[in-house]
Image (cartoon, rainbow, N blue to C red; front, top):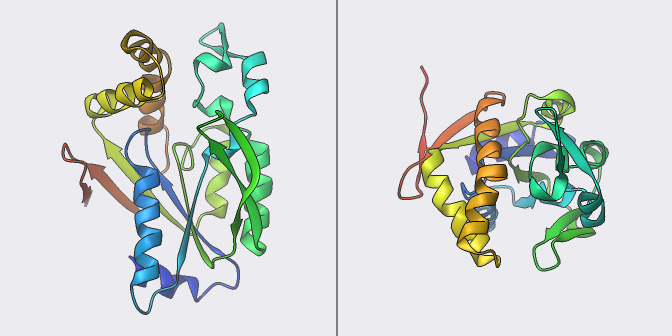
Length: 220
C-alpha cells in the first residue's frame, strides 16, 4: 500500500489525502500511526503524516451549553459527544481546502483537558492520512468530504467486540462501570451503528477480527 500511495501521489501536484474511517474503538489512530512509522522505515516510499478528525469537535464550552434534536427529543450534546452533530463540519471543510494546497497547522483533541487545541500539529508531508469515524459518512454536509479524498479505507467490526472495548475505555477515563455502560447505550452504540450503516464504499475495505487483526474484504 505504501508503494501504491507513493506512485499515486507522484501524479498529483497537490497533497495526496487518505481517509481512514471506521466505528469507534477499531484502532484507527494506532493503525494510522503505524502506517506513518512504516513509511519512515521502508526504502523507496513517500513519508506519510497521520492526523485525526477529533480536533474538529466543537469546543467543550459549546458542547456543554448546547443540545441537539434526536428523534424529536432535545438531548444535551455532552451526553452524546462523539456523534456527527458534535463536530464542526464547516471548520473541517475550510481546513481540508487549505490542506490540499499548502502546509498548515492542524487541531487536535486533548484527552487530558477534554477539549480542542487549535493549530497544534504542523502538517508538511506530501501524503497525509486522516483517521476518524465520520470521514466517509454519506449524511448531509459530510457527503461533500469525499471530494477531498484521494484514497479511502473503511474498517468494519462486530458491534459486541467494540462494546467491551468502549466500556473499558470509558472506565479508564474515570467513569464507573454503570456510567460507562450508560454512555455506551446512549452514545457509542448509536455511533457504531450509524457509522456502519451510513457510509460510502472505500477503495480498501477491511474487517477487524476478534484478535484485533485486519482482514481484507472481497465483495466480488
